Image (cartoon, rainbow, N blue to C red; front, top):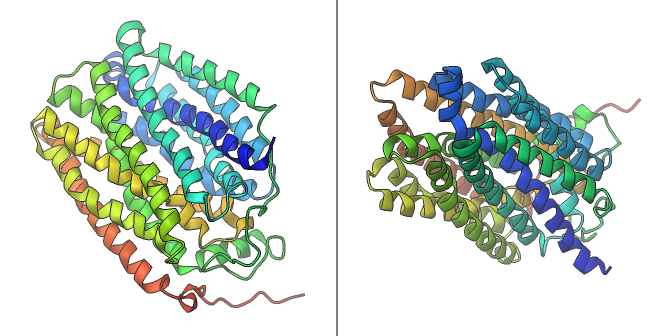
Length: 432
């Protein structure tokens, strides 16, 4: 099979893995109401259930990234999928609150190894000319999986009990992982790079020339990497608030059934995000040919234009206006999401990309993990839990504005000319 065709088939195979990755993690949120009634949980306890995944996921990501730069990425991707699919099935066996917290934590451990390995693998099949498009197509599976997990879990929960959806998703994931053992191939690292083009802002230490600590420091001393990480923390905080609490908000504010709230909380936002992420991939691949920070410019546009729609989501009492707000927020969120990793890879060497992604994703999810708890605390402490959710959803628009402004500053400061890409100076290690 021609390599030009296979590199897109790789994106397709990873698309389906990521579909289950996000369906498995989203499913729990659509059955919060059933869990609350069966186990007599508070909103704060439900927030802990939502954040347990994120804490372990974030803690495991740096290790997942370091391992992803050193062992077969195919093994990590498929092995991780088998593990998290088994944990998804085990979640259905939960009978106590601590069971939910335990299995959600283990889910985070298994899924942590997917993104660093998969994005590194895609970058070795797709060079700078197609990288944003390839990663944006892959990113669309995040939204499709979120819709699938939220809607199917709500439907099965409403008619067959909350456990049924977890049995189904886990079983299908195991079948897919076994099939892809024979079709997914491990590429040579850096094979898609043009030898004449170095990543902007790169360090000077090659993999294997120094210890792991020095190699990690080499990533963090690139200023634009720090800017991208800070922006991702804020953006992921907002995303986790919506993924966790929008189903409950629709159920309480608009009296929707579990199926309807699970569908509407994900469908409009994620469908619009698919369109946005595909647009963002095409736009970024064009802009980066003319400007070093072209992918980052695309992200900044998405953040700023998403602000008014974010505010509307919690402010309006009209279901129609809410749908419009979710569509607008979803589309511009997609512009940002399309280039999260492609922007990072513009300033990081190929041999350290899984490590860089692992640390950036870890920090982003630590920030995101605070969202469900913060909103759960506000909801439980206010006289009206519904009002607490409403105020919190609108307030996230301020976060989008500030991280958008910080990204623009970073582009202006560090991405205007080659001399601005120099890493932060450090003292070189003494050779023995």
